Length: 80
Image 1 (cartoon, one colour):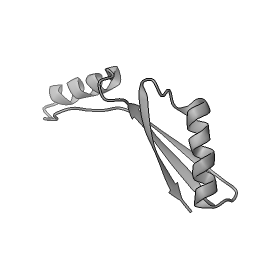
Image 2 (cartoon, one colour):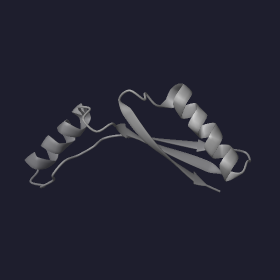
Image 3 (cartoon, helix red, strand yellow):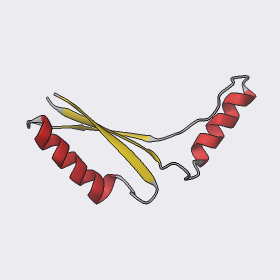
Image 4 (tube, helix red, strand yellow):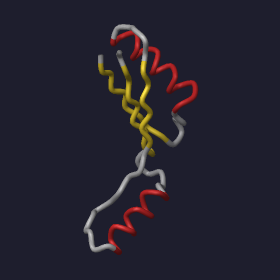
């Protein structure tokens, strides 16, 4: 069963409040990290389709609903 994974994160320069909270928590626990980014992962499962068809469909989903292009970037991974 083919699937797609969409990895979404804030664009460079857009404040990431969740990332800052996690970063502060890790530092309080004694872990040294330079920075933390918190994002979203969306897994989509398909009945059928080629990689090209699925990629085109997922790109359309991202443009129409899944991603806010003003503040977010995304990467699509396809697995057959």
